[in-house]
Amino acid sequence: MGVDWKGTDEEKKTIIDAFNKAHSWAKEHNRPIFLGEFGVYDKAPMESRVRYLSFIARLAEDMGWSWAYWQFDSDFILYDIPNNRWIEPVLNALIPPE
Image (cartoon, rainbow, N blue to C red):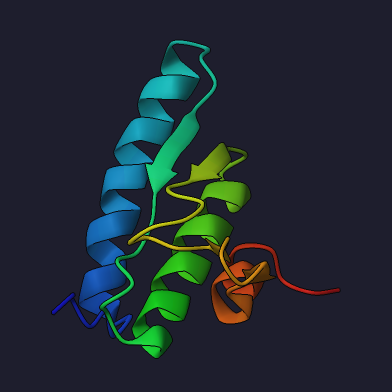
């Protein structure tokens, strides 16, 4: 279960085209963009989740957009509350270590 996002040129182009359309509109209307609530289902392969999250977060940042991850815990898990620990690959994809 879950989509295996390979990060192919075609997959990236689809997202880049959509982001460019939003970015053009924002510039034309002098409006900021906030990319809210993107995330990855925890049943998708971890490598796929990391590729997708890293691509989306960096693309948004490159366009000067702020963003928020969906969701902290549960099936799009970033933080494992019962075990009091971050899901490190997901965290590092969103906020790369320095």
